[in-house]
Image (cartoon, rainbow, N blue to C red):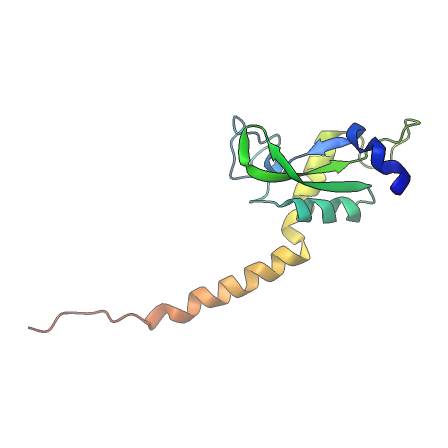
Length: 135
């Protein structure tokens, strides 16, 4: 992949905002709300592109122009220089966004993050002292 690194500028740009369900279309979301996922990260998108057998590279120092506090983007190679598709199942940017948005919620790091949060919210339910005040 070292010889492809100079050509990375011609690869498709994929910002996490494109598939974020928390964003509006005006803020940069590019797929429907029903297909979008909640707060994807560059690392999750990179892993999903790797799962789809697409060459990709993360650029953490880049920011989304509409929201410069959102750092990072992923470069993905959809078509090789000779015009052949890297993955015949994915022919366009839109299909890539939809497939990645399907895969991100099932990402192993995301599944592990949600399990402890679900157990910790049920635990401290009786920790506060409540009830009537004594006079």
